[in-house]
Length: 262
Length: 228
Image (cartoon, rainbow over all chains, first blue to last red):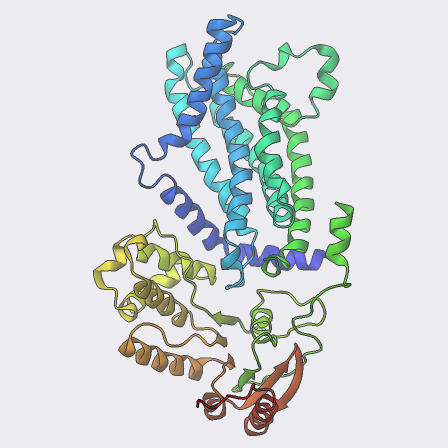
């Protein structure tokens, strides 16, 4: 299996122009025919943010400072992850016909969808940084480290995208799992609240969730203008790399059957 | 999950599209593959092309790249014809810079003219097929695999396509063609492989194998009742 994975990895590197073309195609064709185009990718988290602000800030009056920015940042990061995994599952399934016609490493599909969603997320982050002065926040020395956090999240998301896109080919429940269970995962991550609001007795279990490290990292850089916790980021990165390798081995093992499944 | 993985690995209750098929094709050979519908011909080509991996056995191509000549009409309809050329070529492992060298040839062969920069959703079926074929024949495979992809477009385009195929066949190191046309097989092939229910029923000299195939299939044809 390791030999097959190594051969597939070399083929994937050779086919990197295909990944580039698929990313470009995805960015060009999404929302074609609409007036708002890419803005729809931003509008979804913006509308969710609006709903949360009304609920938490206005009705419950329980929010904290800069709640709007907190929620917008974490919603964008969450969308990068959930949309990336969901798009990887859908794209791999939709390209079934192409897989029966041409030989190429199928992992290009989850790769390209995650990269495309990462680009959309980075543009969204630029929007967040552009509106931050409204709350008296300006880019700081910590701002470039957003790219580090993004990269760690990319590796983590890629592992899910690779694994789930392969499994979903044979078990369609995976797609439903992502659709219905992933939103719940957001609520048990520090997206609508800060990490220091989690009861201390729960922290030990709470920190098992990688987003308990990733989402606060974005918040610390943008809202607090501080460097993130590199130790915890390193642990998430290390674990994600191991997960990605395991996911890739499963993908390589299963991809030979993709073309056989009707 | 355990049951799912067990079924993935189990060989029980599986349908074998091809089994115990072993043969060698040398440099310069044109191998014709014949057989009735469902005999495993297309599965054989998909396996040779690397699209399906065999459950058992190996395929050795000695470093040469086998490519299935296929009418890949799975275009992105929101992209232009030109952008689809780059995307389709990338599926064959071609970078943008490499395909840029021959994109004018591809566009000219497709006869699409200024339509090449229009979105593909505006194309007719014939236009899509012409573009698909034009891309396919400019990929220049080292081992050419053909699954009866002929007869595209109108008469003049069909003739041009056949001429281009003949040109491709001269350049390839080896060719494997699936065809139901015995006259084409006899005229073109240096060897013939006859598949029956996924197994080899004959292999070797085109005349001998084709004659044996015809004799075997004539005996199984339903009689035609004469009209009163």
